[in-house]
Length: 286
Length: 207
Image (tube, rainbow over all chains, first blue to last red; front, side, top):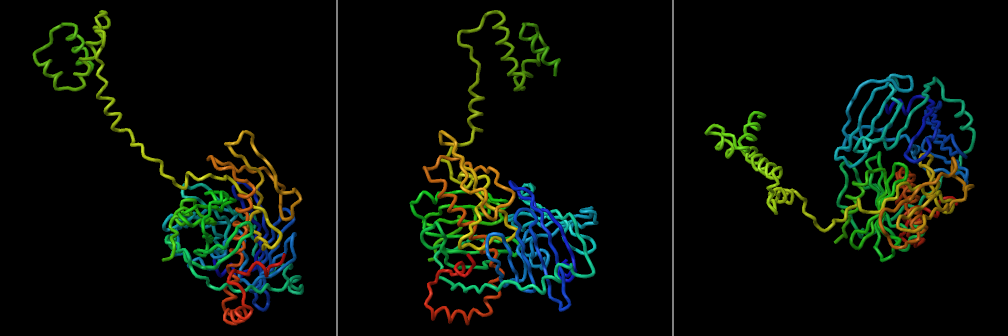
């Protein structure tokens, strides 16, 4: 699967469905040029459009409401979970993989694979991969009760000999400059998260400030490569705006809870139960 | 079984049964209970019911009480937290990094508070707000719990700020990798400039 994702020339159309929102169609193209550089494009087809282009390790964003810009990154962050396509083996510590069988998806023979979170702390995945190329044809994200949380349905998958002509145009075009990020200094830890779901590790730690939020927040990101969880910790105040709340946006959860003297906010594509376990495990560093 | 019941009925009506019948009833709880009920039925039919009929319900009440779950002080779990069914955060254009194509458009459109007399529905986002696709559809923000009169807009702004930051962090996650290679160098520059330790990422992103 990883080989196919990186080495083939293909064009994929797919539709992303999330609860409470209209299905969104996407066009995803991938090509490798003569120098062996990977080129990738992800285009949101409805509305004013949002286009993301990757050339090697430079990802450029073209959006309707701001100037184009680029980031140094090895992949496009889109509905297709990149890690699943490039390094599925890295998920073995977090998920159990079960081969279900064959079926027909998007007119192709598909191999169905099920991914189950080892400690039931994350959503499960149902994957249907193209028998020939290993590229995904359908991805269902299921909660622990088997309810669909998110779905990607491929409507067309074309593998070609040559990269799409679109990429020839790109190579001559100049891309916006890469934004230089200032590295964050590792700040002193005031709080710690004692519960970390199986297979997840801390990938970020910083002290941040947010608009509409007085004071600084301690920020932690946990990730298993597939699911990213943001954890914000701040001194709780009497302010009523900080009252506890669970919200759902698309397939992500927003979970805010006062835990003694600390207000913990957890955001990510995880069940509310897991967000609660994380929030309640926050303790002050002694 | 039916035969036994018929015999019991006959016995209550004064017809003799064989010798073992009485001891059989004594050894059979079900039959004993029936025997009691038949007598009550017989008495009521003959209008011989005592003034306070002793329907012995104490045993069943005791049993019911025993199986009743103990009522404890309510324990606050996350399920008691107010739930906002569907928040669609606003895409902020100023000072915030654009959201990756994957991330759905985000606007909190409507708000309902059950504990208010009139339902409050408003639309904080202008319909022509850039970056919103497919128009706005009313989305409910239901609060299932009585909360202090918090400005709902405050909530929304706060939630939006968090969600936007989360998306930004996810977007920048992989870029961090490239940054770490040169971090030593940039760190020096940074300390010379004597910058505060708060993350400066946002200020470097296009407005």
